[in-house]
Image 1 (cartoon, rainbow, N blue to C red):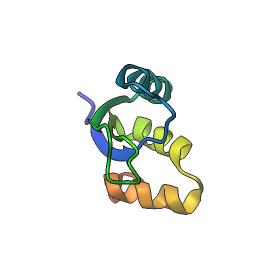
Image 2 (image 1 turned 90 degrees about the vertical axis):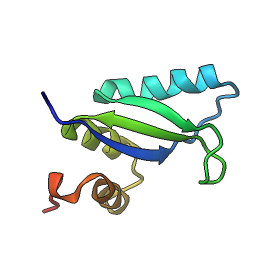
Image 3 (image 1 turned 90 degrees about the horizontal axis):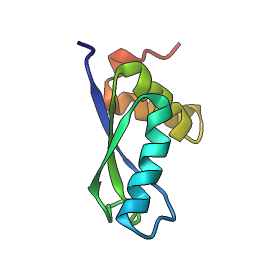
Image 4 (image 1 turned 30 degrees about the vertical axis):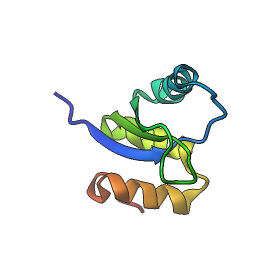
Length: 89
């Protein structure tokens, strides 16, 4: 069985209902092979929903590459999961 990893992220969205938010999370996570679960509908990061994304190491890395605003943020996010999984060159 493939080991699963998780990371909690603020999910910026214009969804006005939980059902729409769940659809957006699924649409974002699924192409990367991840699943997303709402942890807090109004999270601590500016009120954006806090979402826990789960998947294998490669799937999480793919999701974070899409989520990050650039290589520095991507490195920081990968460190939050498990830095040994994603050594930077």
